Image (cartoon, rainbow, N blue to C red):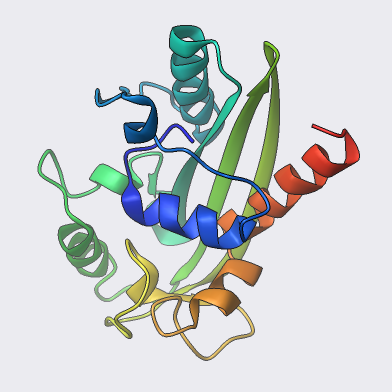
Length: 189
């Protein structure tokens, strides 16, 4: 998987549940940052996958995920990981988001993930999305990123309050990865 995000890597490994062995960039000796210059999640996912495929000539996949907030015209979107600026952290990003939404009634949001899979020089895309709202304060200590403030529709716990098993079943990343694994099974890869 073309990622340096250890939280994301662990989540992917939990979702795939030992059905596939997922190697990280560190496992293959790649420690550089891959610059995400795309304007969409799909472009950024593809940039990461193609970078690794072209360098190592190995089948690989990557994802890009964004939090899309209606009242912020889809922001932070592709800039979700660096929403609070150059030295962004999960905590700084959440703090900025809550500040940007102060006094705003419409707190509708969605998490969206696009996975780019490259097998034998062909690229395939898989998308996952979950709708919900941004809470007015943090709830829970699990997960990472915006999990403490994202309350998915139909649930009374934020992602950061849910068990990893439940989150992985319903999340944007879980949905996209299920599509990817079904594709791999159906095509006998």
